[in-house]
Length: 179
Image (cartoon, rainbow, N blue to C red):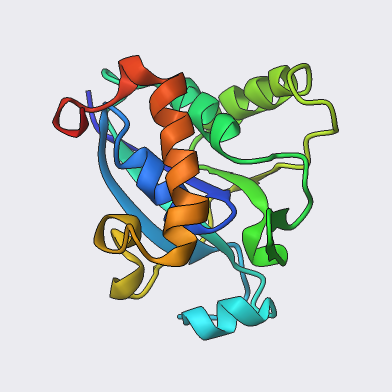
């Protein structure tokens, strides 16, 4: 079976990247930007919140090992899909909760999972569901950020607890080289 792509925005891409790098079946995780109107945006522009882009991760995964549904279940566990344009202290449209689907099947799966999540969360789900758009890889210093900077303040206090929650909740889905 061929590899598939998933593109997800759940706040700061450092958090989502760090989690999905540990998920069994995910072959590659890349931080980037999508959903905006400026060509070749850079991080400083994204931070201004004027380009329309979301910080996202683009996953390459093996659907024979991890399903798109399972990826979305992890996604909805590691971020708050009820806060509009915000994750914790990160505020702005660039931090929105969004699923960019790459096929009609991904769209259908995402609709079902979002519907199910409405029964799990106490507030309405605000996660956007949009077709995949032009994707731009983030600057190199954003790639593998948590792995390279685990003691940096944001990583220690924001990213690490999300990774810990993932590891506790999905202990059976952690890659063998991450245990």
